[in-house]
Amino acid sequence: MGGHHLILGALVDFITGETLADTHDERYRQKIARLLVNVKGYSKADIEPRRKLLVKVEDKKALVPIDFVIRLSGRIGMIIRYGPGSLVTRQRPALAASRLLAPYQIPVAVVTNGEDAEIIAASSSQVISQSLKSIPAKSELLKIVAGAQFRRIPSRQAEMEARILYAYEVDGSCPCDDTICKLG
Image (cartoon, rainbow, N blue to C red; front, side, top):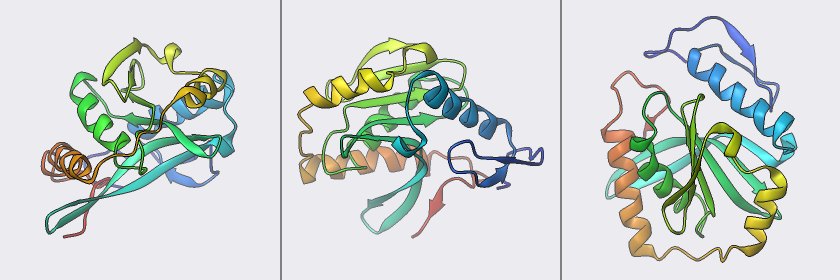
């Protein structure tokens, strides 16, 4: 990693054990990973960090990172997207990702800057709580997953969600942001 991130050395990923570049952003991601396992009760096996989502818009393609994908009972129940700064500007792209990462509506989308968080009921697009403490624990998410409809995303809606995600995360990204990979 390079780009606009100050690299402070290397660190070991809490979930995977991989060696990663030590940046301020990665320190926040590691804080979130520890919160999920040590406080919220998830096992490391429940969490997939750094998932790449292929986003296609007409002849353009890009890989957009999803910081954490939480899978319970065989389905993705929650995604967490980290980004520094304001959370409100991160809500819509997180909702779009929750409609593109799987062929169904993922029930919970979380946006966080590492100090605060907004938890969004993705099917209604409503912020249901705010704070890192209010990120659903494993027991809570299991209940949410059990009651979720996992509504299939129609192809036309998926196309619109891809446009939204591409506009926010690819077209709107800093030219030196090396976490986004443009493919064409």
